[in-house]
Image 1 (tube, rainbow, N blue to C red):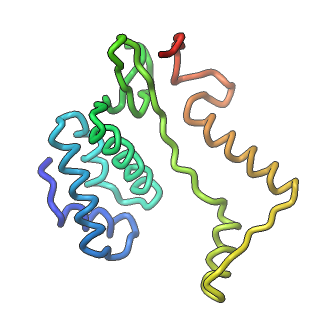
Image 2: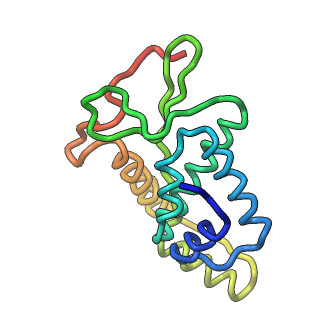
Amino acid sequence: MPLNRQTIEAAIKASGGAEQPDDQIEGLFTKLVYLEATGRYGQLLKGIAKSNNTSNFLALLLEVTFAYQFETAGLPLDYEAKQVPEQTSSIDFRMKVPSGEAAYFELRLLQQDQRTAEDIAKQLAATKVYEVVKDGEDEQAEVLRLQGTLLSKVENAEGKPFKFLETGEGF
């Protein structure tokens, strides 16, 4: 998929984003071209180009940024890797190390809960500053929300893992 600025701008718009400054588009375009040159991120780049949902687009941008940081540091990654052939779901990234071991990374873009996000937006619109105060119950609910969100990426409702099926001693 040949990348160009128009494709990126169209994806941003289709995903509900506003028009972006040229330097922002250029920064994203630079990352995408770099990743495209590796030949390992076709699925990710295709996802960016076809995105039409804000949450999905932002999650893909997180993956682009993550991959770009590793690749530019000389640490190549494999995208959408499986630990074992019979695995039904892939893991976002695999990094192979010289010892032959591999590290796997599953990313999740976490966003503020809707009520808090709306409260912050209201405060910023009115005063250009905001504060968030939570009591123990609010914090406990937030921890449970985050745990559930993270676990849903790697296990089913019965607690059976569908990612990270093998473990090793590490490196």
